Image (cartoon, rainbow, N blue to C red; front, side):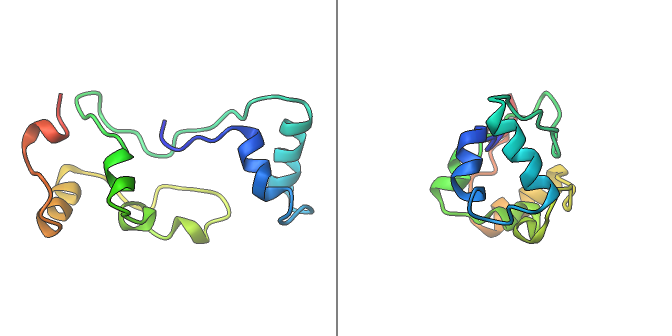
Length: 105
């Protein structure tokens, strides 16, 4: 799963933000009880597709380029349907590799 931080990493920022909100209260509860968060996968690709965020992060591609304006959501949800054409069009626009083995095992 991509970008799944530890509870202590979340609390690094969220301990100073919106302490009264229900999601932050729940996060604080996980932190105080030293329990991991049971993350739910929002995006899931087929088994024949290999994906790593590392290359996109290295190229400083903003999350919203592929996932929509997730920075404005209180709870993450799927905003973009990641079909092959979506990724291929972006790779062509950005002059990134479109070799099949870039994404397929």
